[in-house]
Image (cartoon, rainbow, N blue to C red; front, side):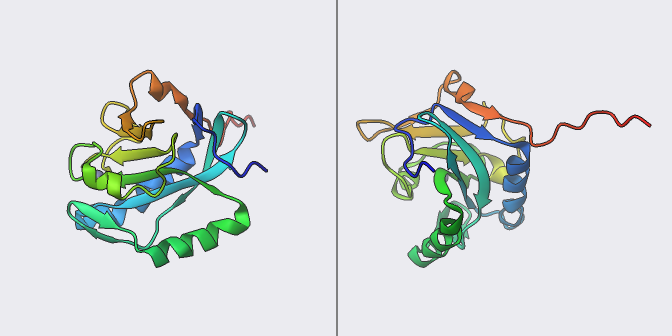
Length: 170
Ligand SMILES: [Zn+2]
């Protein structure tokens, strides 16, 4: 099993099931009208591809415009994912309205190595997962800046079916 993230995630594979679970996990935050943070975990497939398998919602303190994940809560997360060999692939959080990466978000980044990904969700998550022009993905570059994904970069996010139901013939 590969235990190191690629320098650049060229292909991020995710299933509709994970997207659905992610949206659901933000429901309580949306109801309270506070920001919520989720973590996508998964596996490295090869030198450029990663597969998201699991959406983690850590214990956090949230309010209308920010969130905080205490260190002990990240310890709980690491303890829970370790037996599965899951790696942190994307940090996600919701915003009240527009999705963008703020200076504060930069301070909250759990992973700030080159290639790290952060996704911001608009309207407290009340959006179609994933609408490329409303969501925002930023990527840490070699010089330590967070760069917003261009529309071309969005081709790197690949949704793979988790079920293919064909018609039942009787
Ligand atoms: Zn933010």
